[in-house]
Image (tube, rainbow, N blue to C red):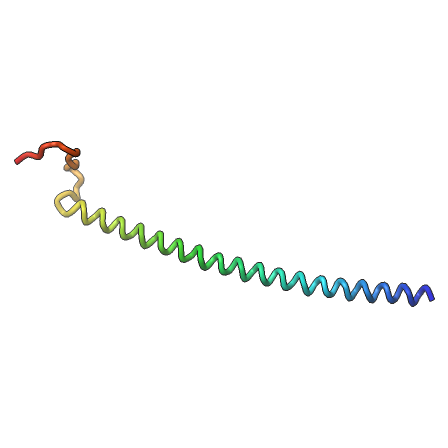
Length: 84
């Protein structure tokens, strides 16, 4: 009789362990999906920042122009008179 009760407890414990393992696996899959989604969002943000950085560099080169490419001429301060 005691052997049957022990066998029943072992079977119930094994069933509980199995159900817990299934739930744990589902949680891990959900977390992995969430992390992959975050990776995609972060990659989009990095790409936007990179495009913005490239655009800023392009605009800066355009503002500097071919005459100022050597950097020998400093920009005039606000309100300073320019030679005529």
